[in-house]
View 1: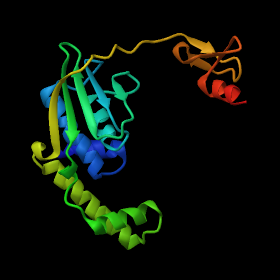
View 2: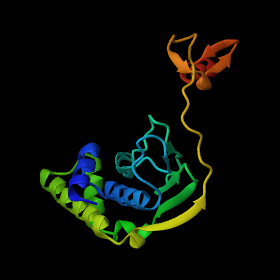
View 3: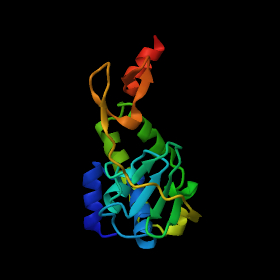
View 4: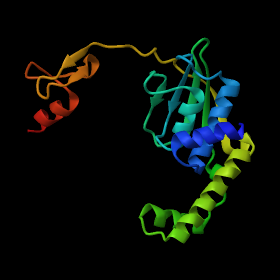
Length: 199
């Protein structure tokens, strides 16, 4: 992956980190083995996590929530399935546990301090340096060291559809008809349904 493209991905995400680097590498494999950047919906990606890698995958593959060809399954796994619509070719890319590098207790301590807002400026800089170094290692590592590749038979998801919007009879906001809930004969959005049901 060219440095210029990596810089664009970093700009889109906001920072470079090991998770973003992992997404760059997964997307690289998908583009090489499954297909080109999805100008429309010819490629579908199913992600099993909501971590940084997903931003790289969106940016590089062109699969997005808005187009309906990026599907999130909240399994908490660093696994990504890429599907080509034309023939159903599917590849599941699973991050290996050792892909993140050797355990580094100092990096973990610095990470905890940064997340808790307790890191000094010097510790923040040290953390960023080590974090970027881990990302750089991922970007140059052999793919087989990072991922297990599984050619699978995946069900090709239906193309995105535009549904009619209905008015919630409680908050008066419009909601996609497939997300409407009925309560006492009234059309309610999910948040209003949950409020009424909890009473």
